[in-house]
Image (cartoon, rainbow, N blue to C red; front, top):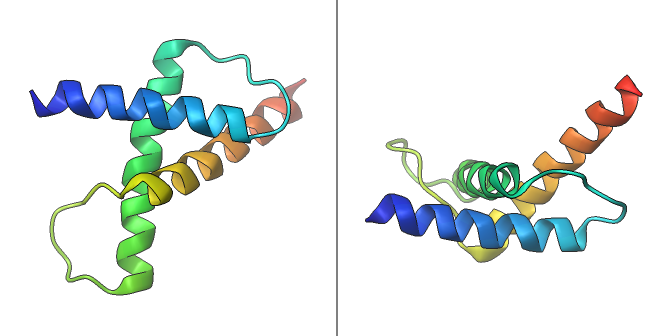
Length: 85
């Protein structure tokens, strides 16, 4: 049940990140959800580094950290995609 919630959360975060990022991102709904989920994990990792929680299991970030993580990943994805063209 938690996995389905994480999928829905990832999709929402991915859609928000795509709306905030300037330019056109031609990625599908599945990649958008994966972007949001990975952004949440990246945001949790960065939050752990910045705010010093103890080492342990990887944690997901909240809304803002997830959006920041997804924006970072989307920027990296967009820059690698542009360099191939």
